[in-house]
Structure formats: structure tokens, C-alpha cells
Length: 256
Length: 313
Image (spheres, rainbow over the protein chains, first blue to last red):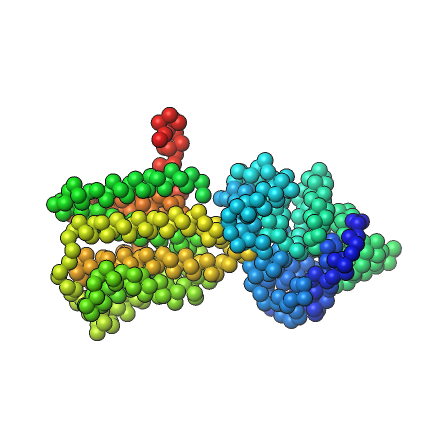
């Protein structure tokens, strides 16, 4: 488990979901979810496919408006804000299916984040300095002048993170950044996530790679059919019969 | 962003050379009028490309802005204004109209936007045809006959083209331009990185409509006549799309090359073979879509890269 950053920071609430519900027609993707996420922690968000994890991220980022409930970032209500406004407040989300700007170079991709995110109002020298720093931090510096469409999957995932970091987020929502990576690449990505946390960024990550998510997270939330079924330390959550049932089926839960 | 300096120098050199033409060939009316129309299309093609090329919103409705500008100038001119003073107003009227069109239509994605703009363009033409109290309807408006020389018009159009090019170059190398490129490639990703996509699309639309509107004003003074079927024509809208596509969508120099080829071909062929130029455009378009999506600017870029370094200035 990652070290608990001491001090007042860790006691602050970065993100609050207050009875959030999202319906798509008759389907309830997220049902009455209430969560408080502590600042500077890593929170893992797990659950079977279709549990509503990505929808929850989209509600927070402003991509979709919740059918009911409120979202608060640093105490400010952001329900119904556009994604660009949420990003400028310091909440940035990476996409599960990476979406690089293919015809721009790696550097230019990151520059978009630096120029428009919560830090940037210019594409000038200050933004460029940010970009250099982020490229170094994410080990993309050697690939800076390559078109994003020419990157490998692992590099694209790192670019997705780099772009998000360049917006200077206080809260970073990572949607399956480890999926599809080789063990070596996963190892690298885990180190990167730790490095981001060390900078004081609050991280919420959706992840299916259990070993990594249990290893990284201070706290794990479990969604199933749009409802929050468990919330606790990685050890507590893995012992929870309801979680085992959601993942492995009823018999396994009884057998445990 | 890349190689900005040599491009700027080339543009300035070209503009200075072209500005000397009326001094040398003052009496050559054919040449001056060819220049006038070419520059008028350069100015419009480059402006269209700000929205169509940089932001990726292909509009087939720019005749609406051209027509708004032409009629604004026509009416003010008839009201006693000096033509030159009407061009900025023509631009502003077109820009305001583009806002009315853009706010709802720019919410549409890709082809849906394009189709909506066809509707807007045609609706404006029919509206203008029927508002005969204002536009002169099907008989058009005859404008004052006292106009400056052909050399003046040549230079004015050159200035319009230069301003349009400078605006597009400034947009391309700016933060605004970066935002437009990002939203062209992936609107949702751009938005999630903080780009105000709705605002940026509308700004690009307004900026290019302003230039096209002012061009409409200049055109009306040149022709001393304004007619709905000519200034609001679908052909005018299509011309801008063709110029940008043939020249190179989203490139800075593309619409400049595109307009030169477009108008030269039309001028050369139209007199002897009235519709043959359409066939030429069709063939060019097919070749470009098949082999070089970046158009003539892409071809020029390839030739440039193949040029031995020693030959490059």
C-alpha cells in the first residue's frame, strides 16, 4: 500500500459525489452513489464490466449530466458544468480507449493540455516549460517529435496520462491505464502513478489489473450494477463476500 | 508552428512582387481583372479554411456571408457611403449572421453540419430573391457607376488576400489554432483537456465569415451590381470548398495555390468551353482525394523535400 501522506492535506475532501444517479432510458448505469474522496490519496474503483465505473467518471468530468444528485470538487458544485470547465477547475480524466490527436506530435499533444488546462492561458514559453517537464516525467521526451499516431499502445497510454498531467490537475481520473500492457510496461505505469501521487495529486483509478490496483490503492470502491457494494482498504474489500460474489458468482462466495 | 519564418518571408515577398504588377502593367485590363478575381478567391479560400480546414467543419454555406456582405455594401453605397468605408460593415454584418447560423449548426457533427449549411445558404438565396424591396429581387440592384480604376481593385483584392493570409497564419500558430486542430481530431478529448470547443468553433466561423463578407462587399463594388442569384449562389459556396480541397485542406498555402489554379483554369477554359472547367475540377478532386489528401500544398511539400538542400534558399 502506498504511504499515507501526512498532514492537513490528507484530511481534506477533494471530490464528493452526493446521491448520484445516471439513467440511460430504462437502464440505471449509476444508482444513488455517495462517495467522499480524500485529497492526495489513490482510490481504486473496481467492479465487473458494465458496473457503471466509466459512467461515474463521465459524470464527474462533465461528459454526461447526472439524472439526480450532485458532484462537488473541492467544495464547489460542478454538476452540469461542461468538461472544459471541470478540467480548468483541476479535474482531468484519461480515456479508457486512448484518444491521441493523431496528426499532432507527442509534444503538441501535451501542449494542448498545458495551454488549455487549469494552469494554462497561453501557448507561450511557460506552457512549453511545463510540456518539457511532463515529457521528462512520463519518459516520452525521446519521442517528442513523433506523430502521436505512430506510437505503440503503451506509449499512447503514457501520452494520455502526460496530456492529462499537463493540464495540472489536482484530481486525476485514470480509466484503465494498465489494460493491455505487458508486465514490464505495467510495472513502469505503476511507478508513474506512484510518482503522480507523490506530487500531491488525488487519483481515482478504474482498473481491472487487481494486483496493481490492490497494491496502489489506499482505498478501494466496488461498483456492481451501478451500486456501490463495498468501500474499504484493499484487504477488507477482497474479503467482502458480496464482492467475491460479484466477481466469481454465488457458489464461490458460499465456498469462501 | 513549424517553419513559420520562411513561410512568412515567402508570403511577404510574393505580396510585394504582386503589388508591383499594376505599376508595370497599368493598362492590361485582362491581367488586372484576372488578378482581382484570383486574390478575391485567395482571400475567401484562406478564410474558409480557418473553419473548414483547421477546425474540420466543412461548410457549404459561405455564399450566405458573401451575399450578406455584398448587399450590405450595395445598400450603404446607394445610401451615400464611400465604398471603402462599407467593407468593414459588410464584414460585421456577415459575422453577426454567421453567429446566428453557427450557434445552432456547429453543434452538429461532420456531415450533418455540412448538410445544414447547404440549407442555410439556399434559404438565404431564396429569401433574397423574394425580399425585392431590399435586394431588388430577381432584377438585382444597379449600383453607382462611378468606380475606381481596375488597378485600384487589383490592389484592394491583393490587400484582402494578404490580410486574410496573415489572419490565418496568426491563427494557425496561436493557442487558438492549436485548440481548433485538437477539436478537429477529437472533440471530446479536446474538451476534456480544457479546450472551449463550442466557443472556438464559433470564433473560427465568425472570423472567416467576416473576411468573406468584406470580400462580398468588394465584389459588389467591382461589379456595380448585386443580384441574389449571383452573390448568394451555391456555386460561390462550392467554389470555396473546391479551392481549399484542391489546394490542401487545413494547410496555410493550400487555399492560395487552390484559388490560383481554380480561377486561372476557370478563366482560361470558360470562354472557349463554357462548362469544361467543371470536368477539370472533378478530375483534380478525385486525384487529390486518392493520392494526396493535403492537395497541391502536399505536392509542393513533397517537391520541396526532394529538392537538394543546396538549392533551398
